[in-house]
Length: 170
Ligand SMILES: [Zn+2]
Image 1: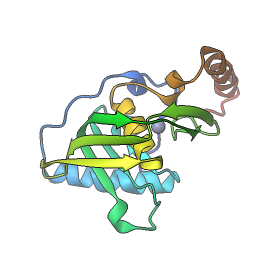
Image 2: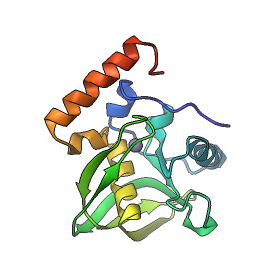
Image 3: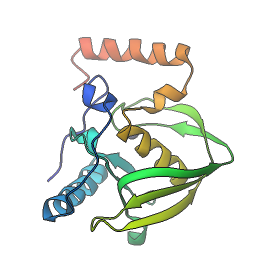
Image 4: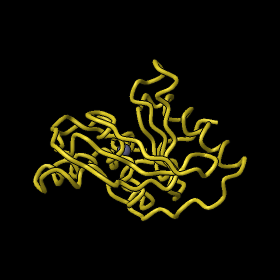
């Protein structure tokens, strides 16, 4: 099932998501649906709050279907190490059409559970490191625009307000 993506302005995107405690078939179905929804939206990462589910779950595929082994499910993820710096344009499926340069750590280690509840650690660099940070931020109710200047953020919010008014932000 493909879920519609929740857009900026919905409070679920700025809410701390709840930990996942049940590692059942329902969770496995949700993970499948999230991959399907992410690919349909042409994204490389998707967090559960972005489909209106305030739970600590995210899916990532920075290769966008090219490498099936690159599909990653992060349940209850925590960033346990980060180092270095990178600055790249960043976007978000919940804030479509906008992109801004964001400086983030270049090498990041995440600790998370898989769909069966088994803990694992994974280190990523560059785009994968960025995805770990971006998606974990989502679960803490934080959007990438909190990492850009207040001036740029206000400008973006003004543009979005206009789109909302025009009925072009749904
Ligand atoms: Zn996002």
